[in-house]
Image (cartoon, rainbow, N blue to C red; front, side, top):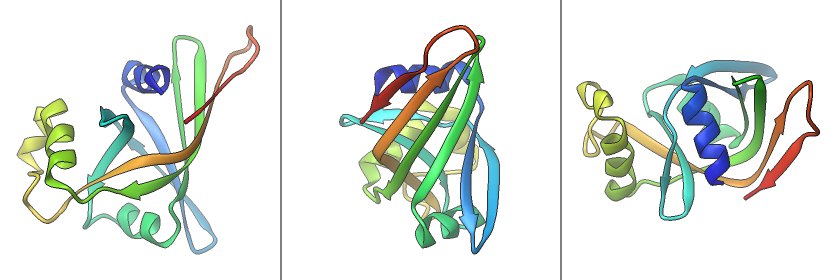
Length: 130
């Protein structure tokens, strides 16, 4: 899981895919944080992505960095605790202009049943499950 977190931080931007009905939706994200042994991402409850995850928590994440790419298939589980939100916002203080752990909008999810595959054109894929 640490390798996955480091990869996503190195990439800086990753792409989160959800579904809305039968329509795939993909958008850029940039937050990732290890908290209490779980890998978290963050969004706002007012965004369509929040409603899409609530309807179907199975997502995929993809990022590219240093000639390698990662694909993560997982379920996202909301953690509504203030401590989890605060940990994320403390890791990304620039988000505090838009979010606060007590604002009723900040939402964090941890990855569950995750399978991450790190690939490149020159090496065998590495599979990480967490």
